[in-house]
Every structure is written in structure tokens, then in C-alpha cells.
Image (cartoon, rainbow, N blue to C red):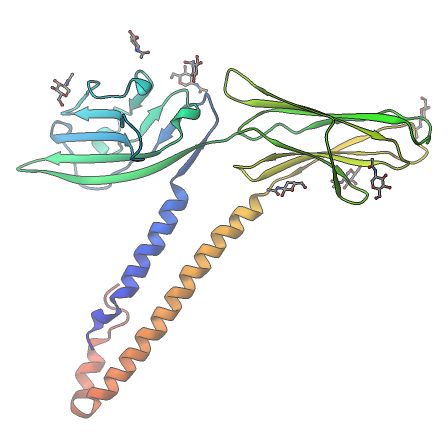
Length: 308
Ligand SMILES: *[C@@H]1O[C@H](CO)[C@@H](O)[C@H](O)[C@H]1NC(C)=O
Ligand SMILES: *[C@@H]1O[C@H](CO)[C@@H](O)[C@H](O)[C@H]1NC(C)=O
Ligand SMILES: *[C@@H]1O[C@H](CO)[C@@H](O)[C@H](O)[C@H]1NC(C)=O
Ligand SMILES: *[C@@H]1O[C@H](CO)[C@@H](O)[C@H](O)[C@H]1NC(C)=O
Ligand SMILES: *[C@@H]1O[C@H](CO)[C@@H](O)[C@H](O)[C@H]1NC(C)=O
Ligand SMILES: *[C@@H]1O[C@H](CO)[C@@H](O)[C@H](O)[C@H]1NC(C)=O
Ligand SMILES: *[C@@H]1O[C@H](CO)[C@@H](O)[C@H](O)[C@H]1NC(C)=O
Ligand SMILES: *[C@@H]1O[C@H](CO)[C@@H](O)[C@H](O)[C@H]1NC(C)=O
């Protein structure tokens, strides 16, 4: 058997590379911020005069797709979508080094897209020398919630008490949970007000009215679905004390995302291992078949390591 029968190892490497690239190509921006969409070509010297650079929206359903165009060393606005007018910029000092990254100003909800950068070079004929994709998503962490509860001097029950919880500066709209920490049950909010601000972010105010019990332990939790982030504040009524105390703690869900990444990588590694084993078995089998005629040359071919 030919050493190149192990070519699927190469394919696997490509898949691995694609997975890693995909992971790195999601850019998260807060509404109102400026964001840089990256597109870097690592090749030989370029002459701007011979280049065409198109930044476009890669989703097909869009009517207008041209985000930015650079033709023969000049920005060309003739085909640019109105939505992106005066909001895009290339980095002029970096273009000749192959950095075609795009600065997009004042990002908003309607900029959530998959973007594609295409670089064409015209010498004798025109050809694509580089392409890159970037997914832009919008998200912003909520501020640490502030929970206020009743100041109670008595341990009397049956009295109705009100808690309030507020947080802001986040995106997208949050989920709000009130939790009875004594038995971890969810309590329905009495009031939930989510406000949308001109900068695109949201703030939230919620109240909870419950019949007082002794040693109440209440938690307010603000969830950001996109960032998979839960920020919570809790209220603990201390026995025989002067009343309330509110304590906060941050509960980031970063671990969940890294677990996902680890999952993908271990699957790819497992596939790689299987491929190596399959390869090895194949080689062993074929070396047996030819061993009667020519053991030495087969050994010399040394398939597994050479193609990579
Ligand atoms: C975005 O860029 C513009 C123009 O360069 C600048 O005026 C503005 O302050 C920037 N906004 C942020 C949030 O950095
Ligand atoms: C922009 O491109 C069009 C055709 O692609 C061309 O006719 C026009 O002259 C260009 N404009 C500038 C300012 O380069
Ligand atoms: C872009 O800026 C120019 C000059 O500053 C202005 O005349 C034009 O109206 C702007 N276009 C949009 C769509 O904002
Ligand atoms: C940013 O865009 C929003 C609409 O998306 C607009 O209301 C706001 O005025 C813009 N801000 C700047 C600084 O251009
Ligand atoms: C919280 O759960 C405990 C135990 O189930 C219960 O006794 C208490 O009444 C609950 N508190 C509230 C405010 O619902
Ligand atoms: C955030 O907390 C709520 C309430 O405990 C829970 O239902 C949700 O799954 C949590 N979200 C994340 C991303 O951990
Ligand atoms: C709630 O606050 C108390 C301190 O008052 C702290 O000991 C406890 O760990 C907090 N609970 C949670 C779920 O963070
Ligand atoms: C309770 O409040 C009184 C005065 O309001 C204060 O002197 C005392 O130290 C407080 N006790 C506790 C446990 O906080």
C-alpha cells in the first residue's frame, strides 16, 4: 500500500484546523461599540493597485451585501449598502502588509451577521488570493445585581415583605429568577420591568412580594442567554440580628464553554487516534502481503510520518 493511503490523516488535520478557526471567528460586541473584523493574508508582498478587497455579508437572504469595497487602492462607495455608509474603515497603514481587517463603528442589533472578506489579485488574470469569515454577535454582561430586602426587627411571620432587584447595561434581554434558597424553588416575580436604552442595552427592575418567614434566604439571578452568564445577589436574614444583609456573588458560566471546547477537541483527537490505528493496521496487513517478495523496500517507504 502507498503511504498516501494515510491521506485521511491530513484531512483530519484540516478538520481540526477548521474547528479551531471556527471557534476563534466569533466576535462579540456590545451595542454602540466599535468592532474590528479580522482578515489577514499571510503571503508575499502585495501591490494595492492590483487588489480588490470586498467585505460582504455572507448570509444569502440579505438584499444588500456589500459592506466595504477597496478597488485599485481606493475605497469604492458606489456599491456599499446604505446601512454601512460612514461606518466602515480599513486600516490604511496595514493594507500593504496583508491586513485587510475592517473597523465597523457603532455596532447595532442589525449588524448581527456572518461577514466574509474576499481579496482578489489581478495580474495576468484575476484570482481570489484570500478569504476569511467572521461572525459578529451582540452581547454585553449585566452589571452585578443589587438586591434590597426588608429591614426586619421582629421575627414575626405572615407579614408581607418586598424585595427588589436591579441590574443594567446588558444585552440581550435578561431572564430574571427569584429563588428561595431554603429549598431552591423558583418564586414568581410580582413585577418585572425591562427597559431598552438608546445605546441598545437593557436594564431590568424586578420585585418580589412574599409572606415573611423566619430565616428567609432569597436570591435574585440575572441570566444572559448568549454569554451563558448568571449573576446573582442573595439576601440572608440573620437570626437575632438587626435585620438585613445583602451579599452578592458572581457566578460566571465560563466553565461551561470551556467544557464544550474540550468536548470538541477530544472528539477530534479520538478520531485522529482511530485513524492512526486504522492506518497502522492497514500498513501491517499490506506489509504482510508483500513480505514474501520485498520486505526491505516496504520498510523504507515509512508511510505514517512522511506525508505530514
Ligand atoms: C468609535 O469610534 C469613533 C470614531 O473613531 C469614536 O468617536 C468613538 O468614541 C468610538 N466609540 C467607542 C465606544 O469606542
Ligand atoms: C467604483 O467602482 C465602479 C465599478 O466597479 C467604477 O465605475 C467607479 O468609478 C468606482 N468609483 C471610484 C470612486 O473608484
Ligand atoms: C456620510 O458622511 C457624509 C459626510 O460627512 C454625509 O454627507 C452623508 O450624509 C453621510 N451619509 C450617511 C448615510 O450618513
Ligand atoms: C449609533 O447608532 C444608533 C442607531 O443604531 C444611533 O441612534 C446613534 O445615534 C449612533 N451613534 C453614533 C455616535 O453615531
Ligand atoms: C422557602 O422555602 C421554605 C422551605 O420549603 C418555606 O418554608 C418558605 O416558606 C419558603 N419561603 C418563601 C418566601 O416562599
Ligand atoms: C441561571 O440560573 C437559572 C436559575 O437558577 C437556571 O435555570 C439557568 O439554567 C442558569 N443558567 C445558566 C447558563 O447557568
Ligand atoms: C448568600 O450569602 C451568604 C452570606 O450572607 C453566603 O454565605 C452564601 O454563600 C450566599 N449564597 C450563595 C448561593 O451565594
Ligand atoms: C443592632 O443595632 C444597634 C443600634 O441600632 C447596634 O448598637 C447593635 O450593635 C446592632 N447589633 C448588631 C448585631 O448588628
